[in-house]
Amino acid sequence: MRGQNMSNIEKVRIARRLTQEQVARAIGVSRPTYINIENGKRELTVSQAEMLAAALRVSVEDLLDSVDGVVAFADSRNSFEKFKQIVLNVIKYGADEDGKITKTKLAKLVYLTDFIWFYENSRPMTGVKYRKMAQGPVAYEYFRALDEMEEEGVILREPKGQAIMLSLTEKQAPTGKLTEDEIKMVKRIGKAWKGKPTVDIVNFTHEQLPWQICMDEEVIPYGLIFQEEPEKIYGPVQV
Image (tube, rainbow, N blue to C red):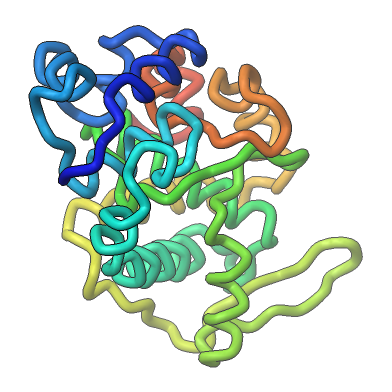
């Protein structure tokens, strides 16, 4: 992928107080490979550009020339559809016995799914950006995904006191864009938190390093999860 501003990448990394090793782990490459990327001797793939932007807490456009950026990310809709499938499967496995889950708890389960997957595989499931919000990390695409899925008739949304409850309209959730291992991860995390109060998962994510060190509304770099203690990554999830 051409159009990379390598000096810009280095400046942003230093400003974020991240080492080359940390950023290399965040995008799933070795340190020597990352150094070549930063020095302009190696080009980024589309997925690496997305992860690098997330790790450095900047937009992809800040790393790529606008022309290349438009062309390279023409398939972003595919990633968004995959994100929606993850959300639907988190509802399936993480909802209470009545099939309902609070909107806040669902957002946190999606975040944990993506970040634990990243911790174990050095890459996110979709590469979507998560930002620090009052109730914990939330994906940028989360609210748009809920709106689309409600319009499509695949989820129901209903108020319950001050909470918003979400549920599936069908027993099964689509999995066509997910691998078997990704489905296992969603199921593993959903079942671990199933039946637990929303406040528990909110408090858990608030205690994690990625949420604590970022500023309000700031993008949370995936790579920060590598600096966390294992018990604060997994919580009730079986390692």
